[in-house]
Length: 323
Image (cartoon, rainbow, N blue to C red; front, top):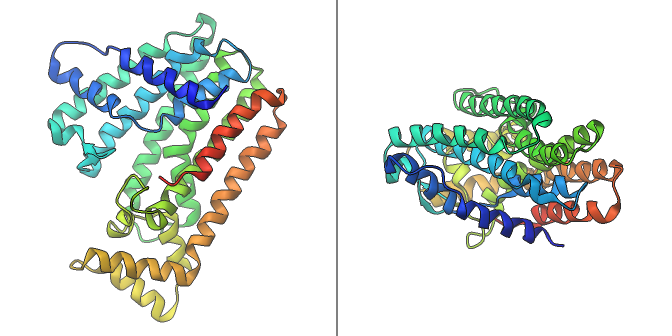
């Protein structure tokens, strides 16, 4: 079996899913956003979590879709907050329709996520909803923290890592934990898998930060250097501000304060500073540390190796991704 089987099964089910019909303006944006794809790594993790304990992993399919619908709900609202024009290379919902439609359609997506989560055994529903609710609140806490960073000049690496843990990693941890819960894995295993997912999530976000600067333009799915142009407080920028001294720090802060500049020149100049300070290597080292921790935790899981091999293969694909 290959992780691509899980992805294909998910995409087929998502294509069949109906979220509602009328008013069209409410439901069409949901179908639009869900249809333009994405990595689907969160619902795949749910299916992989179930497949660790049962061959009947398809029982986790609709709850896995709940995770993906919830994730896309957060993206729809994040795009409004960020005033983002594009999502996965296509116009964002608030651009294609308007902000009010984006807010209301996103609200319905959250409702639909709960509807899909109802497809679990009755005795599992309460503990799963409790874990989902906590995770959803943490994702919001992470998003608020990220927005707060825009007005702060004292963001530390610890602050940043906690923010991405909440905004990104906890949902990956819950996704893996959810599959195991549905397959009735021991509670200790569910907790361990949540930690595996969080480590994967931390490494995944750091890889995303790294690729924003060092990814190949033809392969990376977003504008290379976009974080630099936005002065976004990623791990790379925070690390650079901590390491830079003298003329190098002056040059970096000059670019951060500039209001008029050539975008290509700014990206090249800040990237050169990162190169000088070894920021790319530091980011890659920390990223790989989280991935190694995920594999180490996975090794501790008392499940036969052939079942763990699928999850390991999927994680290795994330590590080697170039977009």
